[in-house]
Length: 487
Ligand code: GLN
Image 1 (cartoon, rainbow, N blue to C red):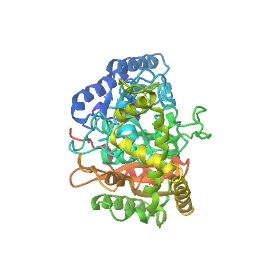
Image 2 (tube, helix red, strand yellow):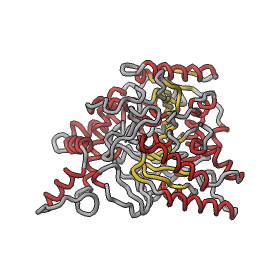
Image 3 (cartoon, protein in one colour):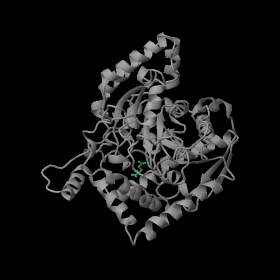
Image 4 (cartoon, rainbow, N blue to C red):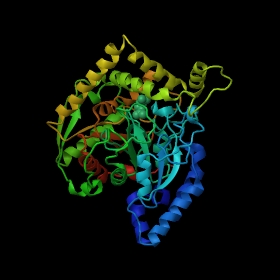
């Protein structure tokens, strides 16, 4: 099964495309056929355009025939989370608010993937406006976990993780504000990379919390993630928070950087709430690195206990401001039969947003309101600095940090009905966003029930090349990433 075309890695498919033993049209057809076979069960896609994908694939084959192939992504079907703009395609954020919106422009990551020759295929489901950890908050219905269809794929980028795990793309893009790439990657048994804040342009990404949001890849292997990151990373004048730095050759760094590394184990990430089977799988990964000559050191990130509160103040504050633009006037859902502008705004928003989005807007407006700003928002910003400082202090003694990605494996649809229970899914991922660091989730085993477990490696700012090399070192000694769900 793992050798079927839709389950190939980018590296492998690219080699065959280059050798002329595979065409992009053939590969894209196989991915489309696989999607047709499983999508009514997985429900990863909000929309897809098969003929458009085949036109892109044929163009790639024509380039190659003319000796103008563009690189390892040329002709590879890649899916995008439905918060990333593609000119002329629907862009919904899985919200009723944008149910009929068509993007008039390309996000920078989209333009860069097009330049690399990727076949852009499908808009992938998510929690509405990326708020959630299970994809159940989508206005269009939940995505299911390909390893167990009664369970969630994680979120918010659940469609991106599930589509890849199910063989409906060779790689996908998601966005990660508090864990939305890494947690679904862990729950679906694929690699998920959240880059350093500022490495990948956010231009054309629907904003949730602008100081936390980053776009990043889902891929089958660390090498494929390196290929994807290489295509999308780098300075963009259209995003004022985009970092000016040379983008290294991430793929080459995988073979150049050999370790051994000093690996820090933050003790706060192994406490209460950690599922014992997840804990055991992560302990085995630690044992692997130790056996390979890495120095394993326990470290402390003392402000970890404040991460969740800090995140839910800052993220909701920024969301309340970002989502003010959906007012029913220029675009998005517009209420009918209203008599004045105030009614137009309030009814459009009441009808267009789902319950979780409304909860976040209300919380965020509250923490920013006069009288509460100092007590909540300003204080949260100060704690955020302390949280970042914790990580930077730890990096004086170690090269990377190793933790579980998610405290639990995939849970049942409907299981977490109380918002706080859902928020706790992200206790190991949120600190990374507050600190602006890069982090990757790599498959590290399965539970007895056959559910994937993910290992999180957290790197130093803009040291993705090192992070990827450490991750690849583990991956190469294991075969978790080669398993395919029996759908
Ligand atoms: N689950 C977190 C939230 O609901 C993180 C979401 C994300 O990273 N987009 O806010």
